[in-house]
Image (cartoon, rainbow, N blue to C red; front, top):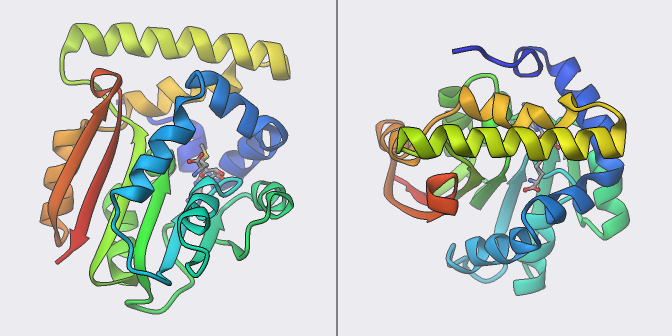
Length: 231
Ligand SMILES: C[S@@+](CC[C@H](N)C(=O)[O-])C[C@H]1O[C@@H](n2cnc3c(N)ncnc32)[C@H](O)[C@@H]1O
């Protein structure tokens, strides 16, 4: 399986998201025909956060999850963490209460600090999935909730290849239109090809000390929300 270069070099990852940052919110809405916000809101609602929860928004980008958590409970304390400083700058303009520049591989937090953690379109980018999921588990309180929202490889092989092809064409279109560079968004299918299915991720979560994994499949398994509790 070919792993994208950006995943192996955090400077390339940062440079890519630095270029995307000014248009990230627009492209995310356009890519999903406006559904992204609804799905993220559902992910927050079904996380059943306690009131005044301390919440990690990892790979936050401009902070959609932090802002939705605050919208639902103004007493909550969302903490946005991202590798790319400029994403957090745009997030601050949108009203992010707390933003930290950091790496998912080594989170700058003490053990058991968070009631919940959200990772939206983030896991696919991390160089080592088990390390990232173990770090997330470390910073969650026992019984804390992990919420993952990402593209996934659909199980049926035919649909998988059609879907990857569709993402490639759509990515090339937006990349060329907005940046004069197709690669900026064809990174999505490239990183997805090297990612996993919802059932494999659920098994990995259980092996790493999570339980009660729930999956909501979207786009016939091409996108999904997964909730899991720290055992
Ligand atoms: C596609 S954006 C997701 C933004 C937002 N969470 C959402 O759901 O729309 C992916 C983000 O992951 C960040 N990222 C990539 N690798 C990371 C790492 N190792 N640690 C923390 N953030 C990372 C990028 O900087 C980028 O802002």
